[in-house]
Image (tube, rainbow, N blue to C red; front, side):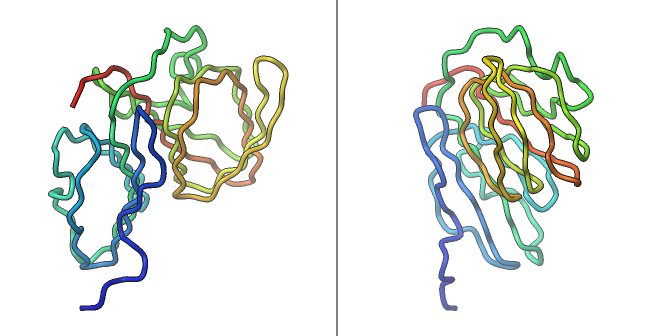
Length: 188
């Protein structure tokens, strides 16, 4: 069997806190040997939006149907950045938009949804990985008065530092992302 042109496992970003890995497998394709930089691992399935947490060193052991393509982002948790409690915690201030889908002593995983052209309130986010489940186009107003516009297609993952901001969905379609927030360090 000929190997595919693109590597099915690609490291998209790495710092001292996380490694972000994209996994793209064709239907029936097996996951090649891969050693994570750290565990635990938060996996975001880009096809379904489901989130999975694993302490396993071998996240490829997850049982999947072989007749479906796999598109996922894996966030390998290496350490946690120094953070302080957030006075404007998004989950506390806007629980209808920011839903905790998983939380333990290592990580909090939050699903964020905005309807078309919806605008949130001013909130704070800790350092985090943002994974886009839909195409994203937002207008941002920061606590210091700065403004910015950001956008990304579905399936992108990026590291973001602490921010206090107000978000407005600039699209006519709903916006959905997953936030992976490292909480505490546990050496490896």
